[in-house]
Length: 374
Image (tube, rainbow, N blue to C red; front, top):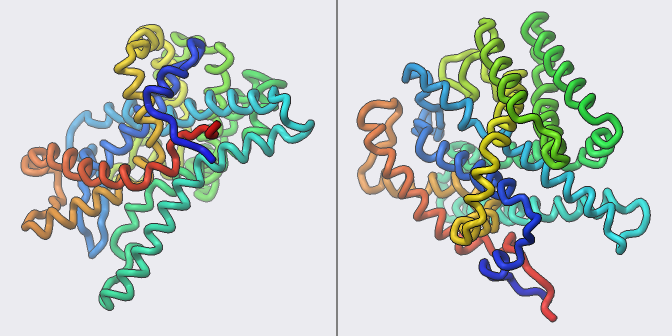
């Protein structure tokens, strides 16, 4: 038997040694992704499908925001920190038999990721079956609303990186800084093959390698070996140089009309962005850590992390529901970032949030932390 822990119990149980900024940045990353998809995407119907481009190509200089708000590298950095801590904790657990560290670590991490994901997929499958039976003309969500499954690709990549932790953690222990140096060189070579020698398939190698590189940076944060100023300078210099070569776009997210996206598949620019973002985090960390000592602030972080997976998985479903209701009430999803589109931004913050709050209330229980009843 187990019982769910209250928020206050979790807050009270926080050890003084806990790096609260890691938890905060995890919650912040997911919040930024959700708000970006809701508020900063020109989500509309195109040929019967819900699509979600962004207005970056329409507003001069707006690409610069993506150097801070493209938080996928940051999420993997935070994941690297947490996963190295979990890996070492599993290795130090006296209850485990020799040779079972990897199994214990992967089982714990997989359950945390896959339980809410399995529920999400199961609920959508049940809804699809029900609608298919009740509405003969129903086309199926795969035909009109693939955007609701956007979170799954990210979770798939992250799970693959987690599975690689037994290897990457051991490499970190044995080779240290040589590992990201070699990875960085490999990322550059892969991009050279893709763009100079037109081997387009090579891009998908970096689709994995760049995220492993960002995750590896988190290991150094965990070990306290991060020269913040040097990382900011190195990452920013690399970004400026790379985005002025005439090969890479300046935006760190896909932009309508551009042939190349730095995110699909990922390029050396995202690796440079990871270095830059980690340096920025290290610079602001002293102030951030003091702020997070406030009980009210830390309590909000605990709440956010407690339902983070549910929020991430269901946020585009909430948007879809809000959009359908909006259109049934006579509204129109605008296809261009006009003045009217900008004026609607508060609506697309509040309406999906109301729906998501209901979804979280129903489905978050599966990921909330529990303890064994005495």
